[in-house]
Length: 215
Image 1 (cartoon, rainbow, N blue to C red):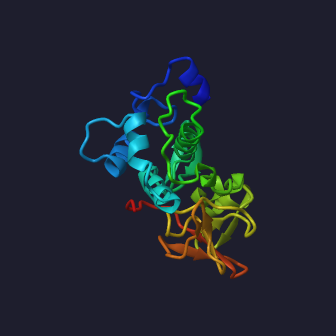
Image 2 (cartoon, rainbow, N blue to C red):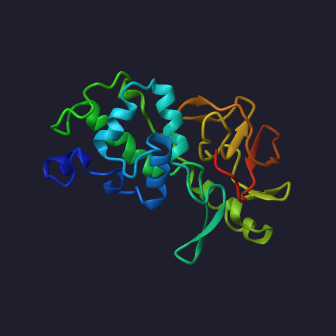
């Protein structure tokens, strides 16, 4: 836990964000680019200062933009075997940054690094968890689809209509769209992003996997 890492002096105000679990070189470069483009490093203390006067909505937008996956919306092979439809936002990276901000906001780091935040950190939440079946089936061929719980329609292996897809980067749509617009940590996302396949019931659409430029 982040609190324990502060207590054990594994993290301090001078630690860089790359020292956090799940923040690798790619996400670290993106965080620096979004929050401190003119500096060579981004420490926990400097990050706290950059965000302290932001509104909660602006903070969420910048976090989502910074924490996009390198291979977003692409099908990649995990451990050389299972195919995986990569979400737009890196869930583990997003979760650890939210956890850090909440620790700082409650002054649980012991250094009052985030004591001046004007936003309510309790409003930072993870999006709804994606259904397990939504993680894989869009990557399957027609023959693979039949035996893996998917529904082949409009040239795409689709999850069941009631399944939850990954969230988009606000204000853009994510893996699934419907008549009420999909939801993300910011709320309803209304701007369509990517190519979608029609579903048998005509009420939802699922995004087709493929290379996609970052927001």
